[in-house]
Length: 74
Image (cartoon, one colour):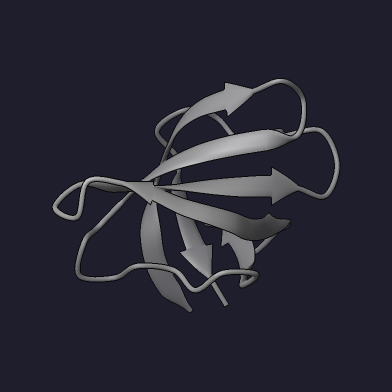
């Protein structure tokens, strides 16, 4: 399990935006879990500046993740 970032915004009901660490970028289509090991979704896009990237996660169900929560990749 690898820390990939913190959630900063929920867009709509199923899209979660993360602020990532530039040294630990997630791979596309990798499965994402929260700190309780509950499946959240999968990474569909990595975008933004090279020094401060963002990732878009498509949630499996309605996003129940809170803003500021740590997100991990399997």
